Image (tube, rainbow, N blue to C red; front, side, top):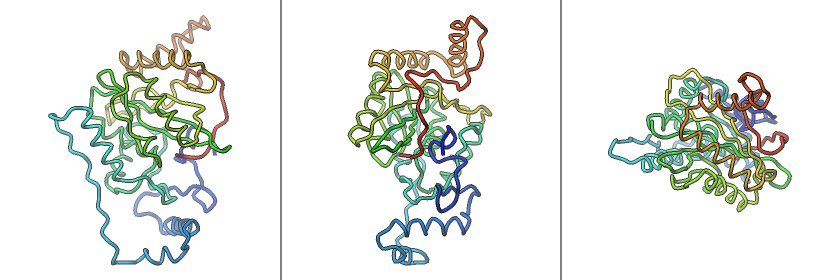
Length: 306
């Protein structure tokens, strides 16, 4: 599948043996979907059905500890609070089950996505990168001085296209990120990067270490701190293609985004973009067709999640 709603296996995906398994009916998980997850696990595990027989219905298995959401105190600094939030998300663990337990529709209002985050906390099940971003937004909502914005990566490996997303954070002149990944180097980044360029280059380098080549980065607008907001997150405000843009262009666009991030709200950033477009066309400010600035040329959508 392709398109913004299916990039991370979150929307409009088939819940069949052939396609991604997504829990769209809430909890408890429907027995048919639950059994499909186990069948898929049996197909991938070397012990096949012997593996599932040793787990399903076994009352002697050790109790699985339930992660507890962090308690954030006013005496703690922002870097410490972000580290505690990341620690909690890491304890939930990355979802290798083959079943996405929480359906994420990215075009939903922020308040609805925050309801999903509450469900993630209540059910305490493994999650993937997009679910981790939604949870991170919820857990950082009370950190009013922290700007949060989505950073989405598209990479190539052996002819396959992979997608990954984290939540960028900016505070007191430093950049960092929260998230989950199969690779520890592609998720949490401490609040220590002096520029957005340094942060993005760190992800690009870490992808290269995993034999992945990043060919597109999407920067979204800052997310509101109002958990009751009816507005939707703008996931794609600026698109940068590292393989197409020169280092100078890469840096210039990151610096432009950073300046806007420091001094403007999401509404102001969007209106400034519309004004620039209007000046270029000698017309009136108008919404863009896809809400994005693109550095480089457009490419084809991929399907794999990291």
